[in-house]
Length: 340
Image (cartoon, rainbow, N blue to C red; front, top):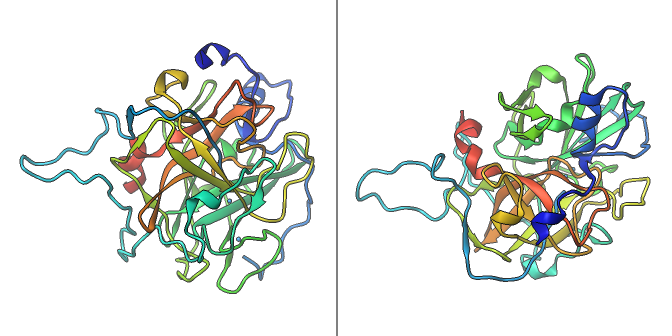
């Protein structure tokens, strides 16, 4: 059973750094922060944007409810139960989940580990976050998603190494993380603009979800869009899901790619996933999210809309390990907190 093989060494999708401080070591090692030596230069103030994910399994006909009975929204007697509830901007009520690329066939996605670049405009809600940490003397990159004109959703552990006065650079509307694109945005925020879940823990890792508040609203365009959040979305075990981001293409890489990459993955059964009330697990041998992908989305396409169901949290050191799945924060269980 896969669940018996969970005793593999796992690393944050953002950072692998050994510290004498046990709490820091565990919080960093169990997530997907970057373990890379990156360019320390800060981006010019006139620029703006990027993001990532992973998964795979065999197709069984059991269905996975993305909302637990404890957190499912209540409905009045006789009220129809919607299979999908889109997340809308609380103020402007803009629509969500619309890919602006011509390639809307989900079967075209390849792996992120050893994968291919995402098509321009396919994931216009992708966000890249980056800051320099003196603790580890390097940049710490993460992914995220635009869920309204002023809010980004990401993983809470992405900010474990963030000092109070250090700026986090938030890029929205890019495929190439180093190149400014027309309509893209670059913001600089600090720790006061970050809201981590009040029950977030680092050891063990739990409630790994956070909000980032932007200094101002973004303008939606063909390169900047909002992703929907699935509320009662049913996906069969083995069902197709997608991840995207700027994490390493293989575990041995020492640099993250410039271009956004995507991967097609598959959900696995709850009994093969740790803490299924909080996490979703996905697994495909040789395919995975990896270092630098923390905070990015796990997504599913329904019709012409995209919905986020997970956030890259943690997984095995050797990304794509055929004996261990990737682990993603179960977004639908946090919809009440997200909307508040």
